[in-house]
Length: 222
Image 1 (cartoon, helix red, strand yellow):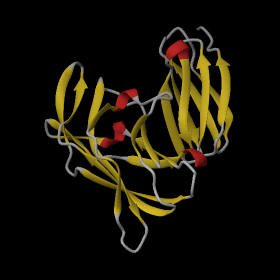
Image 2 (spheres, helix red, strand yellow; image 1 turned 120 degrees about the horizontal axis):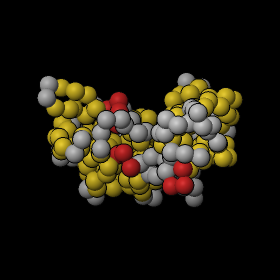
Image 3 (spheres, helix red, strand yellow; image 1 turned 180 degrees about the vertical axis):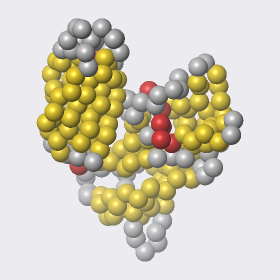
Image 4 (cartoon, one colour; image 1 turned 135 degrees about the vertical axis):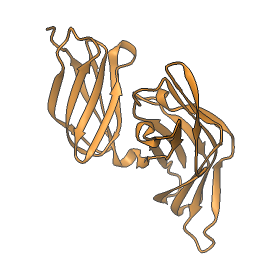
């Protein structure tokens, strides 16, 4: 089993730093034992985990069978940068338990993806911020991707099928919306340059385990 992490862009912050100190899964056997995937302390900037970039949190070989939960342990020293100023980020509960209900088969690599929504996870509290993690557990087998490129830097949003995804264009103004629930979406391209009109493309179909390539999208000049 491999566990990785991605994020949706969080507005208003330069960086969101989290420290992960452990990842484990619980075997759905009579002993209900926890099996460690990683006990190494690793530091991540959530805002870099977008547009096709993901971080591997842990990986190990498991016995075939079912696994009911995952345990993600965060360190105390999480923080953010906003307008160049470093601010402490309190984590009320360092241990996060997530239901996964994973069935592991022999000789098959099973990949879980934690979609860490930084924007919804940060809550104002007095003069500081508290992290109350909002995380979706996804698998590559049950989701799909939307990719393409734009003729200018832009933010990209996909709405539909009970899901909302967002990213921004990266190198060569390419984009990749990751781990979308299969179904039909409307994709909105919002230019970072006010000289261009925004555009919305309807009926973009996401298929399980596939990449839907929208090709090159040309926004019109005003």
